[in-house]
Amino acid sequence: VNRSDVHYFGAGPAPLPTHVLEEAAKVLLNFKDKGIGICEISHRSPEANAILADTKQALATLLDIPDDYDILFLQSGGSGEFSAVVYNLVSIWVEKKRAQIAQEVGDDNDEVLKRLRKAVDEELKLDYLVTGSWSLKASQEAARLVGAKHVNVAVDARKSNDGRFGTIPDESTWTLTSREKGGPAFVYFCDNETVDGVEFPQFPKSLVGEDAPWVCADMSSNFISRKVDVRKYAVIFGGAQKNIGNTGIAIVILRKSLLPPVAQYASPDLLRQLNLPVGPIVLDYPTIAKNNSLYNTLPIFDVWVAGQVMASLVDSYGAKRIGGQEEISNDKARLIYDTLDKYPDVYRVVPDKSVRSRMNICFRVHGGDADKEKQFLADAERRGLTGLKGHRSVGGIRASNYNAVSLDGASKLVTFLNDYARGA
Ligand code: PLP
Image 1 (tube, rainbow, N blue to C red):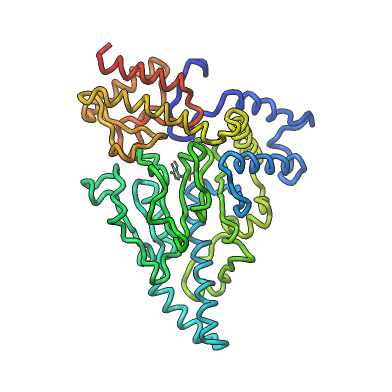
Image 2: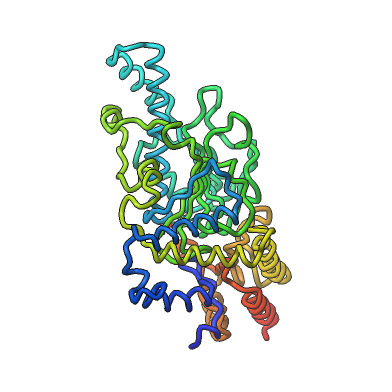
């Protein structure tokens, strides 16, 4: 089977632009005519540094990332960032609290520690908006690290939807930690839920404002697919293996005021005294930032791939920047959803219309009849439309519509959806 005969709709790892892979094959063997491949050069070489700088620049250009934000690359995967945001932001919260108490109490360290223990016990809250499987996992990781009582699930979308994900309940029902009581250490949400096909249509209104809490967002599956007002976030992160590149790195966009000297982090000793976790050094944002993401060996090839993908978007869309990709992503998603909606007797889109993901289009065929869905997948595969099986936890069909899925690919899927529904 030739690559050009197939349109792959897998949810991640996901397709990459063919021209990037062709170039990758060359640089794996011989990078910049050095007689040695890109995976073999030092991550501290001038060539590696240039890759890092170019990739950062391309991302900053695409998303209009302001100067007061840093871009980090880590090997953590998306899941490692579930833990990293907790370690880092809890540490900042604790140190801020300690400094406040020390100011009130003075040098009496025992008293500071006593009051700090009480403050942690009563006030430390991490707010999670649980709108799908990935934000649920992130909230569970937070509870595992700091204890469930510190995790405030401000919304659990299953509760108002028969125990299933597929909606984002109205913001008036969210129970965010009150800002009057100091607010949460951060609010966390997953911008696009890959398994459940739920995407935030826009940035939540309740999280906007001067004194808004720090917002952390997982954009693993809709990174660089639409405009983002970066300033609204403290941390944006995502694994590369969907819209950006191959598996192996996570990208973090971080407000610089979360780093020293503006933000101070609690010492490991203090965290231990408070029974709070001390994070691994490879997830420590100040360490990674200080070392330009080269604290330890960074997989430079992965960064190169991401850089190539981003540079081609910069070239393609010019002044429109990521807005150009957004238009295409929206058009492709609209084509597919409009077709599904034409045949309500055959297809049912899983999530509510108001929160349908442009990236992961989840639907059932003939009410979720297992044999019919199996047949649907087999018929699609015969036409070279692959990777359409839904996540094992929810079943059904999922067409992932990432950036590397072409308009031609989306159109071929639409033709198949029409033909299947008409019994052609
Ligand atoms: N967050 C989202 C939205 C995802 O879709 C995924 C993986 O599919 C992850 C996090 C986890 O990423 P990783 O497998 O890189 O840990």
